[in-house]
Image (cartoon, rainbow, N blue to C red):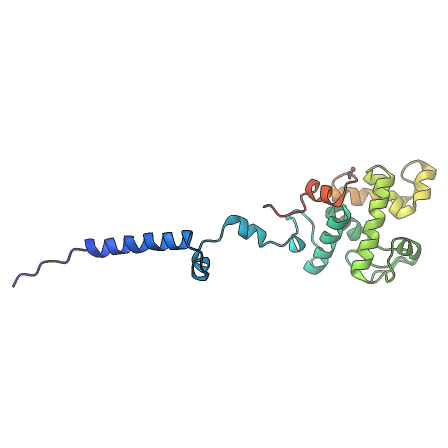
Length: 209
């Protein structure tokens, strides 16, 4: 008895036809089924990265993601580079939320009672409140000294009056080391005073679209 081998042509045509139908359905017909099957666009993937949860890759980390997010959001909301905030916190407290100095400065950004009150911080041990007040103070000093990071840091450490008195960084060993270490970590001596929107663009603080 002679058997003629099956030819795969018909089944191949069926597969091709099915693929074409799926393509047409998934791309031109809107339904819950097709929305599940349709490929996710690159823009949709990008949009999935919430601005509130975004931290640029080159921003330092404290080792605590929640704390990093607070620093990032505070910097973005106040128009201050989070990289500078990280550098200040590292020098002030090494990210210890309960840090307290011998002169009474407290918290991550080592706020003195007068500075805390001046910039609206009622509890210096509150993480978000401390960072917000400290960053407001930094922004105030950057504006006062025309974006000069060196002078702003010197004033943060030794007081605005001493910077005015000595017309520059005061001749105090602690303050000079403070400025040297932070500017070294930050890598910049100029920080433009911008609106939060302008700063977010200038410092690349938003996820790409």
